Length: 316
Ligand code: UDP
Ligand code: MG
Image (cartoon, rainbow, N blue to C red; front, side, top):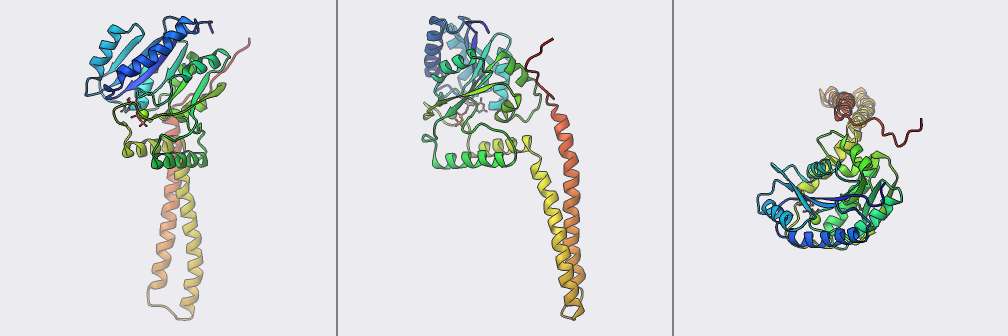
């Protein structure tokens, strides 16, 4: 990497008119200082991605672009959600940049950490995760649910970086590799650790949102978590198979018990056959669904069409 890499900071914005002026001040001060001290190239930029906001966000970005030399912007025709907006920004920026940072517009994740991220990138790391030190600024509910989610994902065998959201730096080659994941159901936090490059973490304190309100209400949080689970794990399908097998085992137990009762004449007419059919049939249906699920899981993996490998280095 050149001594002065070009850095592009990709910032997804959805209805962020209240924070953008302040965000621009803080980010451009940090970038300008790094340019002045020759840590990064003067071509470095802040790239705002307007994710189909219905408020004054885009006119404001245009205005900021006029008045600040470091501000660039792209405008998405409609709202595609945080993860897709990030991908849009990264694909627009990857040709022009050596290093790419993604950060939320509200600057809850301290942008001062960018400087340390750049240093680590210069030392040869390809992916540097921003990891929050604690969750003091979150509500009790968000904290507990988030931690439960990380643990649950771990159980399902999905590799995640604990307490890392989408604040990270990636080199050009890591970003290019990330962009070759063509799937629609994006869960970037799950994909990035799969890229397999050398990584590092930078720790920071997460603060409250400066202004405006969270664009992740509870319902979106759940659907995001559900996306994360179902995009990375076929274990829920396998669970069906296991439950089905369990039902068949129970059916066998009940069969013995029912036949015993039948033999000593302790039953109402028709009960034995009824109870046996209920358990056996449910078991067989569940096993059938589980087997179908295994195939659907395979089809799912195929259609995601993820890259099969990522060559880190070649020596000829
Ligand atoms: N965002 C987006 N599209 C959406 C929702 C959110 O680009 O449909 C952006 C938003 O502008 C912000 C980032 O995603 O920059 C994270 O959103 P927010 O800060 O509201 O989430 P929270 O920090 O509350 O989880
Ligand atoms: Mg936020």
